[in-house]
Amino acid sequence: MRIDLLSIFPDFFTTPLNEGIVRRAILAGILDIGIHNIREHATGPHRTTDDRPYGGGEGMVMKAEPLAACLAAVPRVGERRRVILMSPRGLPFSQGRAQDYATNCDQLILLCGRYEGVDERFTARFVDEACSIGDYVLSGGELAALVVVDAVCRLLPGALGCADSAEKDSFSRSLLKHHQYTRPPLFAGMTVPGVLLSGDHAAVERHRFLESVRLTLERRPDLLAGLSLSQAERKLLHR
Ligand code: ADE
Image 1: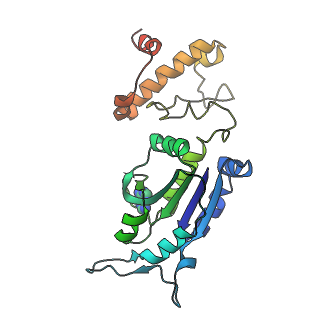
Image 2: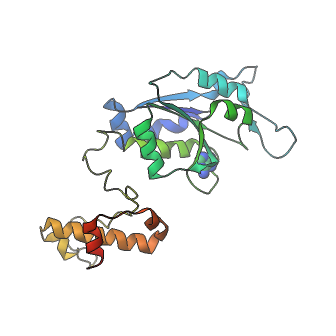
Image 3: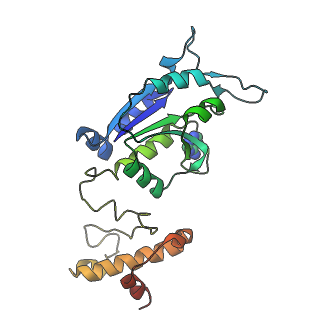
């Protein structure tokens, strides 16, 4: 998959994309990233990328022409390309949406909005969807775009060391992940649940599943509406 990031602050991306799983995926050729400075596509002596809003009001609006020129300069990769505007006005990002992007797209183009917004005529013509990472306002879409890159990257085949660890992530099936423990067996006077040391894999699986359900009930009961259980899991719950 290729992900292109369009921003007036391209330096935002250098360190985060050069660490951990994303870096590994890039080096392994699983993920290709393009970073594009919108300002380089602006014209005029000051290469202005924003202007005052028609109708008056606070702040500045990102101009349509530099955005359109920047987008036109992005190389096309594959057939299945989506242009996504990062914006607090977008549809909520979720594990399901990350899975959709990872499965159904060859290329994602993430446009990082700034200021009070983007000229709607650009959005209407070129943007397929808007995406929000939560109900809060960031100074711009750069951090939000990094969230999308990270969440999508871990779902690309081969990106994670252990083949099934994405499957066991929180949200992968509307359940939060169970608690985790590692050595030492005693820390700050606290032990590890005995079943995890028992070597009984079926018992460990049962314990973890029940803990996931309990945690989800306690912290995110809203998620349970989307949960479908196998017959075996239903039996476990009713034991
Ligand atoms: N830009 C500013 N706030 C944002 C948010 N919550 N999600 C995505 N992009 C944004």
